[in-house]
Image: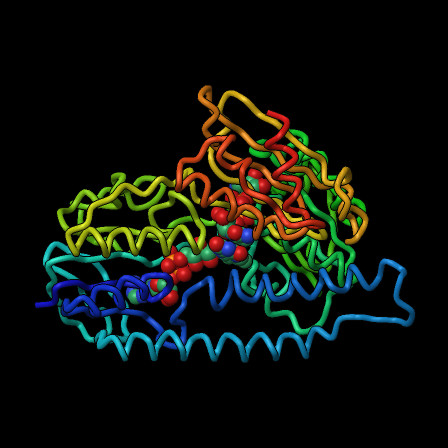
Length: 431
Ligand SMILES: Cc1cc2nc3c(=O)[nH]c(=O)nc-3n(C[C@H](O)[C@H](O)[C@H](O)COP(=O)(O)OP(=O)(O)OC[C@H]3O[C@@H](n4cnc5c(N)ncnc54)[C@H](O)[C@@H]3O)c2cc1C
Ligand SMILES: NC(=O)c1ccc[n+]([C@@H]2O[C@H](COP(=O)([O-])OP(=O)(O)OC[C@H]3O[C@@H](n4cnc5c(N)ncnc54)[C@H](O)[C@@H]3O)[C@@H](O)[C@H]2O)c1
């Protein structure tokens, strides 16, 4: 009998380490121990951000202030990324072993009797079970995914040569990041999406600026486009878009991800969009939790990590609510990334980046903007940032929201000059 069984070695590994170090008897079940670190490390955050960082440098170099031809050696960069992934995977495994977590390589399923190990065909018992089995790409009906020409982000992130042309379906986080990457490295990119603009969720001004930025780096925007059918024929992808034929070299399907739920093999655990959990990530079966992508609440690595640590703390007797709205989100578009946090509040102030002293120092920074939101009592409720490294700047608001500060308190902070963070100071002074 274990104290805790964690199923899924993506971000789930963090709970296993914390609990084992606290003296609990813990097993971590991962179907492939070479995949410790999960989607984020192997097929998501780490490879994508590495590629995007390098592409951003390329964009700066191409601006015209540097002489000589430069291009990205994708093969070399992919080799470098593979080494990083291998070394991080080893580091995760070492941390688990040092914490004395029992590692089990198998597929785990939650049944009425405990955790069934599929290959070993035995059932394990535990006082607590933490499900962290992640998500998978949504492939809309009619699209014949083959992993060669009709691909998902997994295959796109592994390409060793830049394709001449790629068509991306979906303008969410993956669609916008992959469009930014491929267009910057010289691939002709068509970005298809069903609506009239790239997002209904972003503030309108951010949507407009992001669309302008995508056009500036050469992305061909194709709004109001729905793919009814797509299949590969003789190394070309033939799509039916709104009834018209469209041919392309590659089709990257980026139409969202869906929580994995087949791990649940009992009626006691309810499933809707994902594995249903309450605000403390408890499923409908006592002492069984579901964290990260599989509960469908917020598909982000840092959100998954915050959830697994929250559950680990609960098991150790410290129950605290995790406020999901206060978890930052970002999309690494090029050259400016977009980050946001919190909620709109009732008041807002904004400051454009091009009024700052630093403006003009980085390619494309003139489109940047910072928007800050507050409630009636001037407490900060959220922010939207379009700026160079917005994903770093948003951390200021993660701290502000956690500390529950108001505008006047944050105004006391002096921001270094000349930096993009000064836009935060200037926006605060506009309340
Ligand atoms: C292209 C891309 C880019 C991304 N970029 C970012 C980013 O920049 N920042 C960010 O915060 N998030 C990003 N994400 C999202 C992030 O990767 C996920 O939110 C995160 O990986 C979720 O962690 P998880 O532990 O819930 O699931 P996963 O990381 O998917 O881990 C689940 C693990 O469970 C294992 N498993 C599944 N079923 C079983 C079973 N039955 N038995 C045993 N083991 C099982 C799997 O092998 C896997 O290792 C990105 C995602 C993608 C696809
Ligand atoms: N920087 C980051 O943090 C980062 C980067 C990449 C991915 N991610 C995470 O990975 C997850 C998956 O990314 P994503 O971009 O695939 O999802 P997403 O939810 O961000 O965007 C999905 C896109 O597909 C469209 N869509 C949804 N259903 C569709 C359908 N049936 N047919 C056609 N289009 C459809 C949506 O309108 C949207 O444009 C996200 O939840 C995201 O949080 C995060």
